[in-house]
Image 1: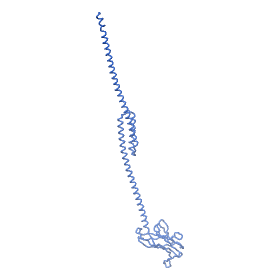
Image 2: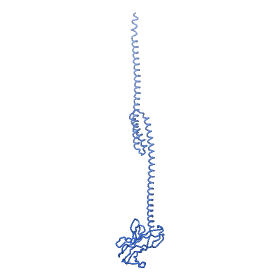
Image 3: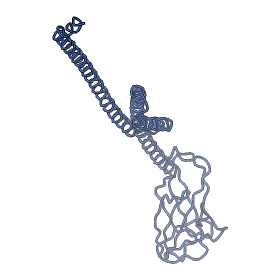
Image 4: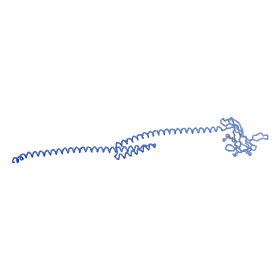
Length: 310
């Protein structure tokens, strides 16, 4: 019994030593586990920070990309606004494209749409706009060419019109010349007062109280363009007061337009020079003074002279 009592007493220091060693090992294990845990947690925290930093960078890059895309769309819309054309179909199409750009801008601000998809749609609209630019430039060039051609044609038409006007004027002048040329020309207009003797012969007189008629002789010049055949020449005899003296032995004589005349004679004109005379018998006695005699062809006085009676 005593042996059993003293055995524990002899092993006490060893047990304590072993116990201390076991506690120390446990502490070391705990420390090691804590160290490993701390290292693992530190690694995780570092990894998560990197992920957060990467995600933050991606968010910032995405926001910058959206802002850049929105600015690009704003510029594209301004480019559409500067396009000018008179083509109604193209104007309607460009209005539709501008509406699409407005829709894309709203989508960019909404942030619920893929930036890459919006970029593709933006690029499509840009290509369409470039096509409009080329088309409008071609149309403008064509319009310029048409305007130049129209101006050239207008100038040509103006030149032709001026030429035609000049030709018309020339033709009118020629017609006037021809018409004037058709008027007979007379020379040597010689009126004389005549008295008739008892034998019926004619005697020239310069005394008004003896004069019974006025005989006016003349020479018609050659005129190849004048109307040939029967032509009526008229005589206007104006008294000293300038009044027309009507015929006294026949019905009133009227020229073209109903203008009265003193006497008339129908001649057969062949375009060659010829001599003729026209007789005028007054309706009242002649008075002393200066009488004016006009030889008339149509509406033209072709010769004029005076007759003085005492």
